[in-house]
Length: 365
Ligand SMILES: Cc1ncc(COP(=O)(O)O)c(C=O)c1O
Image (cartoon, helix red, strand yellow):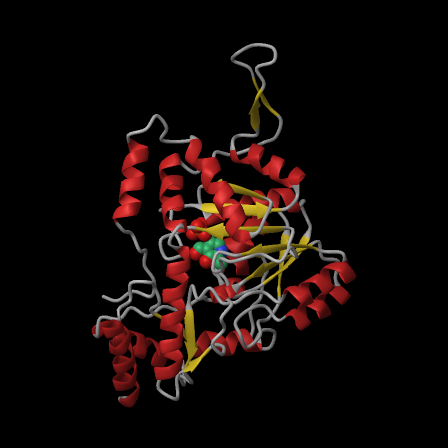
């Protein structure tokens, strides 16, 4: 089965992990800091804190950014963790429709900001497409909001607009540490608080007694292991190659897709291409399901990213409403969009096979 995404692990990764397994440290050791420093350079942030997964990264960021009752604008087109992390803090997600590119529509965000008191924007660089920093900078200054970028799909140099960015190193992402995530910021005060929150809210203070430690925050155990960080360091060395491969595949799709399958956006050299999303004008969801099943029979596991978060039963229970009238773009996207396989080891033969299978299945409609 050809999946929509998968990890790329080589002998170097395996050797790095084995070396760390033989070392004195399995959990917090030298690799943690080393990985954080390398990530900070790569992402152009002053500070990075590694955590156990992208959801933990969002959770700790929400503790830093939000209080009970705060309103946060976010997108329906993301993995659940983005808006769940707002609810962890008893704050309130305010969903805004998407634009053609699958990211939140920043013009609609501005309209919402004119009407409601909003504390923070949680923006997702969906599929790897960078967020419009210029527009976000303008919104930040004009409406005095804080900004979090959920960069689970994006990996690249930051332009210093957001207050906090979060990352995920799940196997389908750009690099993997098995489970894993990171939080990046340029604010030293935030960085220090995140370090505490990641480790039970405690710090070591042996100024009185050698065994002394102090708990000053209600924290968690969201630490990333040394073994995972060794893997991350090894993966990071290949990030440029991984990105090159993703771009080659994206270009191939742009050049070879059947005419009625339309990429979500023009080829973009700044996209990280975590996903390659396309649209087809399915008549209804049954037709879309039939198409997915036929592709599966051919050994290709298409995926759809994402079911509108505010249409989930949990969100309905919380009083959220998802209707075609309020989210016309998301609604259309939900029917039309799907994600094609894209990952560094997807061979030319497999890419051609994906195209052939799309063509033959669409012909039978
Ligand atoms: C946009 C987005 N945010 C957050 C997450 C959560 O990351 P993790 O699976 O590492 O907890 C994901 C994971 O798929 C994601 O796609």
